Amino acid sequence: MDALYRKLVYGLAVACLVLAVSATWVMAQTQGFAAGSFNFEPRFGIFGTTNQRVNSIYTYGGALNYYVFDNVAVEVEGMGVYVDQNKRFETATGIGSKASPASGIAGNFNARWHFVATSQATLFAGAGFGGLWCDTQVPYNGFENNLTENGELGATYSLTQQLSLKGAVKYWHIGQFNKQGVNAFGGTFGLNVSF
Image (tube, rainbow, N blue to C red):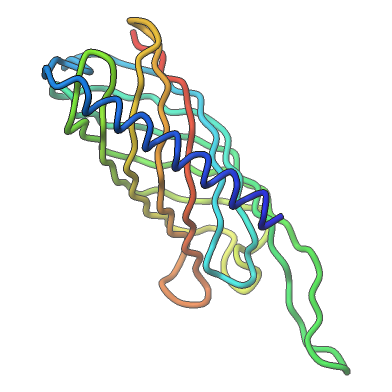
């Protein structure tokens, strides 16, 4: 599972770098996303973690963005979440482990700034906060309901006037800043549909 996760994260990172390089090739600054416009983005994400109890996190869902200024957006994000985690316990022969996956929903309020915007591509940075509500504790020694924070760096690439691909490398923190919390690193991929 770790090998598959690493390949997917490397693939997302390479895709973001390719989009970033293509954005720098076009030096004429144009408006990527105009103030007052909306876009909807179906997206999915894959994350690995630094917590030994949580192997990987998968997200799927969507986001609605509103551009309050040119290239500056506020976003409402809703996701389904699957957490592949293990429950560890003491046994007569040492420490045992068994699968204890969690499923749930997450919501975030984010802000995003497209700091490089060309006619074909943009580079952006974003951050936000929200919550995660699961059917079991995440991690298993944590809580079912958690506060979350996130930060991302990514790029968009225009396919048509209304459609663009978006990829981002993302940090997602779940819960407390100790062993009862999770630091997740991965990426998201989506398709922006502008209105």
